[in-house]
Image (cartoon, rainbow, N blue to C red):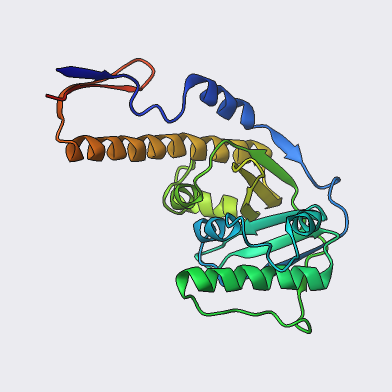
Length: 252
């Protein structure tokens, strides 16, 4: 008996690709952000680890309940980012109370230590928090990418449309490129500094294209592992015009 599996993997469909193309639009942020901007370091190794921490529905991160936590998060914007393989930092922009912010970050660090065994990091209320009066996000480009581990891997290893590593580093030298997870679970690419808008759009488009290929490969490998586990036989494998893979399996 043969089983026909069409469009495997189909991690991103044509409508999703349309969204990707439409997403490469710049949203200016400079005139929309009010209040104080400051950043706080954490003990979290990467954004994937931060996702695991923040996805815990039973942790209110220093607040009495979920409502109080949401009220705090609505005080402004929180940008989670890493630079040069360092620990995740959080850029707070808005009207976040100092004590609540310290408690929030300490709760994140404590949760990460509980999960991974990483050294505990606790910020004292008397510790100086670095304020950033002018270093505010200038613009963002929204995407439909959801896997921070894959995004960061591509950002570390690819030229992303630039001819050479030197050209890429020159572009990055214009400021900071941050990842910000939205409430929908997707990531915005935030550009802080003197970035050329056209180059930024090209950077995100190339990042999205490589992300799509990486997710397709991951999905394909998972499907093939499942096929091997079930001891099915692949009779044929065809790539169609939509770059989807059609597998025909013998399940006898």
